[in-house]
Image (cartoon, rainbow, N blue to C red):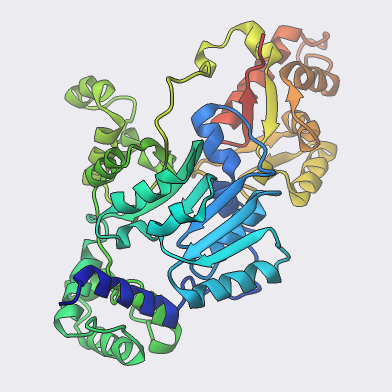
Length: 443
């Protein structure tokens, strides 16, 4: 008697052996994709949790379910000095991943053809685990999460995700239909993809399954990967926010944040976010983060992935929130530029902006939100020293005063308190958008 789960695992392995994912050219580099680098830079998630800026040198990162290695390459590019370990059940994918990292000049890497359940046998503890587009293929997400939890350092962080059962419902309908047609009995290949294309093209355009899951431009040659990863995806399943939190509890893991947390703000769904209907306005402060996320998904299920960060349960928050900082705290604070903003292009444009007294838009260098972020030259000059090293708040204020020594209205020497307030407001704004990071210095 065959084991259904073992049989499904074999089918999944066969699918990725015959069509490694993601199918991205070997020479493609993520260097010009700051948003991807931002997500995969350890500084981002550790700062979000601890309000501390870490050094990536010497860190050990696991890419669990690394596939053909493109995310491994992003992790290597985003975290200088870190060691990357990639594992995947597909031996063909592992070969491609190894070739990819070697092609881009990374040698502090290791790739192994093994399963998530076998992670404890590696005898290694990890600072960070990236498990992207894999968790939903397990019979129970907690199985994989428990295995990763067992090899995660006490202060480590896991990034993983689940398919949303609500947002992705239409594709699950398509998979069920093609399963009924026998296209998923074995590993789907070109013939099965051709049948999907013929079937979908033959449907009327207003038929819901076609309207909701199909691009009329899809072809067997150019869109095989899209069809395999959607309409013919072996083992694909969907989950809710409640399922996600249940899996974390079963794995003794603590939720940190959604990876794209700005796109999960419940208030953003209303015309007047600061003036909610009375009942919601009264009850919202008492809702848990789980309930808030669940309500968002029920009202506006736009996210294919429930993409999250988690880790071992931590002691109570040890840092002081900015809202509680004293004047002395602000004066001694250390300011950092997010490493993904520290590029040669940004440096050149920043210098041009400062010397030309123009307006600098930050979104093209790092865009983690829809808000347009601009700086005038007087504030941009404060960022210049951050390209070389973190700076104290007072040093940034003094730099701004040198650039603007007099009040433009009174022509009197600029008041220190006024200058401090102006720089502080800018720093607060840029920190809230992740361009800057702040650390409270010990007294």
